[in-house]
Image (cartoon, rainbow, N blue to C red; front, side, top):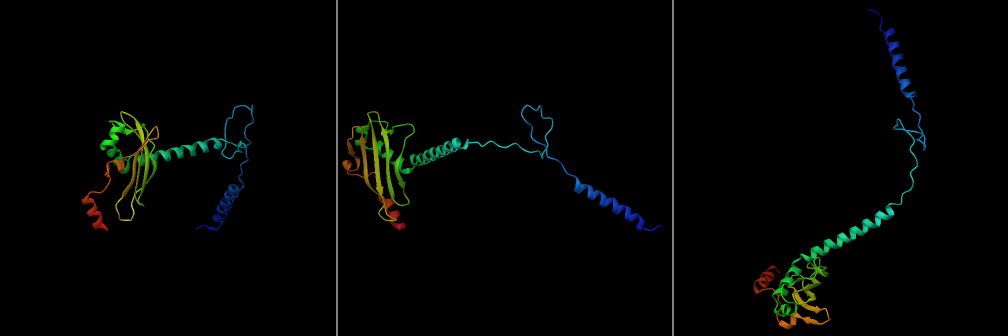
Length: 196
């Protein structure tokens, strides 16, 4: 049987030589192509990249983005107010109120296709103050509705419900009829009292 030592040494030398060649392998950087230098036939991943020219496009796009976000936010909040129970209830009360129909006419609805609902609707803290334009077959007017809740578990009390015509005439719908169309019914009042 031949000794194993002579075979082991040439293999170790071969292994060491292969490792040495792996560590000494280096690649050179290729400069970027210059203008009018002809077609670029190949590109290497480790090539030097050209300097970037500073871009000021964000100075145009950033204000446009912020403006679009602001308009979208206002539109979403306005749509939420428009579909709230407060606005739909006041619109229904205008349609069924005799004095309001006498002033506005029939087919009472928002004055524009995309109405702006101004004011505050904060039912959690008991504050409601909304203003929006309505129109009928005769004329249009600005409707204002104010209501507040004096206690945490209390009932909302209407303080103002009026129409302001285009000529500035103010018509108080709440005191003209001596009835509050938004007052809770006796059954609702009992349910609220039972919860308190």
